[in-house]
Image (tube, rainbow over all chains, first blue to last red; front, top):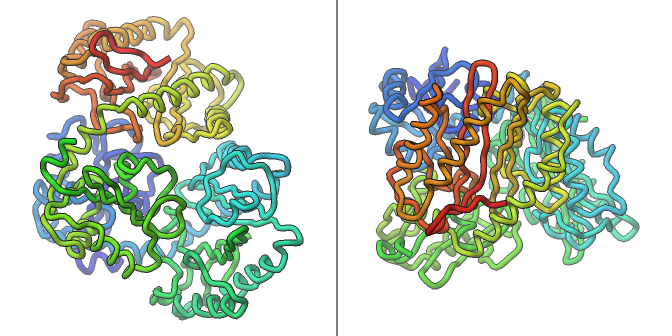
Length: 315
Length: 315
């Protein structure tokens, strides 16, 4: 990993999701630390958790463990995942030279290992199965969200984020909170499951005649995005193609075209006109073109694996 | 508020829960800022959210808005709620003298306003109603957790944290993840709902003859805690009384006696032997004495409002 060209060890503290990336652990792991070396990972945690870790029962024990285990000259950390207070505190008790490797960690995480792709695939498949089994007619947004999350829980997963259910006019708000409104079209269902640390993020919009035309434009925008996504292509170029297409039909994007998914629903990279990174094999993105007007919204979102050739929609 | 004795304005960024404390807003509010003055609050947010805010559609617009609105010499921030990267970035674009007021904000949040107490009360009542209506026999831990969260969702709330259901031997692990194990005693159900930003956190343990004796000790520990909790009392003294009682029966605490609740499930203050703060009227705590042995655990948790006289268990 590129990270270890810059530092000898990396310290990560929960809730930074990189803790789970480096340790492979599942659960909450409150106030826990991972000390990551090129060939080993040590975990320091309070005794509430179960698993391989050095457990501390007091602040003094915690500090002693961190000092003992973090034996490195150059210590890497993620400045976006560590609070300013923790940064000052850890730097003081551990010493050494602290180097921000947040960017390098993110870049490593964005290209998925085979085992990670398998877990995301599983989360996506289970999510699609649930989406197909849900009936929405006659129900309120909150009821549909409750049922969706109940089904995830029953399958041993949990909601990766608050399920968005937006009926009728509410569909025009990308982050609508599911409420009392009863089923009406357009009906947006945007949900994701977390299966053993890995997330899916999928959206369907159900329209009637009124929304059909907008739906077809959004669907075509999704096809364009997927056709363009391929190892070696600049992300912003994909976005530009989609934006040009939408503009031709008199529409613009109100949010980014998508984002990488993984341990986090927004796992590092965003697909926007400012994204000047190059797509690589085994990056996994939620691609979510959408059109919002004053009275309605249509969004279609698929999870997509970048390949050397044509990208694969996870089905 | 004491905060404004030290600074002219406070900047808070989501996901720091103080954003919701100062603005009263509900929802996700990704990448949003609150600029808090003694008599006004300005919100800067991307256009995904609905509500009163200055919306930005680019980084440049965001920076311009922050610079324009954060017109103060001395700017307060919460070093525990802001990432190191955000701290460096905001300080650079906004300028001024940055002062850590995290402690003062926490101390303000810990004493609840009347409206906050009302919302916590509602969350507790709804949670207790759900707990009473759930039947666990014959079901797996994951099924019970799924049903509990479904009921919260149906009532327009959501789980404040992953519902803990631990049957039989699993009860000996304080942070057990609900799994496939079928109902057995001791059966721990530890759940909390978020009602309009405010949390409950309640635990019940169901025992049969085998666990009866331990149950009675834990119940008595809870009574001792509540009898001791009162405005003017040092928190550590309450904890000491409970610890002494448990020690007399050959047991110790494996986690703290409790924690304040509010917008966060762990809302700032912890009840441990190191807690040298003084209890004040309208602090609200989840009090959760517990005994864990190798083969079983018993935990009882009530949410409690500190009063001038005897503390009140929220029923």
